[in-house]
Image (cartoon, rainbow, N blue to C red; front, top):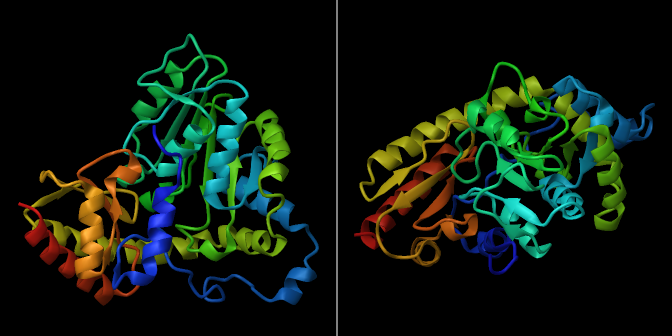
Length: 345
């Protein structure tokens, strides 16, 4: 697998300040929390009668219709990925990760010494790592396919599904893959993307009670406890989910129409046409590597996009459309379209 570095993170962090047009941010910006029905007053937090962690766990449990014993708060989504891989490293060093996929789903098991399998069967335990919606394509995983993956794994295996972007499908009712098979399936989610609460760094793992107990024992060796204030804010956000849904749907549906126009007017490219994410995967046929292409786009046009190589793919890039400023998105896509017209044959 090569280097286990989290290149996507460093690419965005290092280049964000240099970009005139940022098309790399996959999470919505933080809203005015008071307008979203979230109380932010610190004195109110200090006087809350219930402990923040238990309050947060109950909010997640009520959201999914499960027990709070099935919930472990995490520091955003990245800690969840690490904890699940660390948990499974005690049981197997075989992992199956279909590509393209979110880079930590590849880099974390590589760092822990997992062997990447091209297939899996019932004869041995394996960790299967998926993202739904897929990051970077923004496409939902089909019910039939996920069921076949779960049914095809043997005893001791774990099908881990990062559900960070699943809510961008705007389904009538919230659901989780955990309910498909509580013995084999482990899922994680975060408030940093759909809810736009990136600064609070709150996520969670949902798993069977015995797995949660063991994952909780690993957590102090990784990051310790979540900030109590962040959990208190997070619990309120989840309980006011309907307000966040309206905001996210308005932003994403408007911006996707703008991206569709960009794709249709740029003949050198194709795209994944996402159905449940504020980003898409753009592909092209030119021989230039995507990392070189993206670096050139940044240097010549100030456009920041994420290379396909960071997702285990090639000849493409992830394009995010999380902008609250419609004009900023339009201008960024105009610059990118002009650049691609010159750079791709």
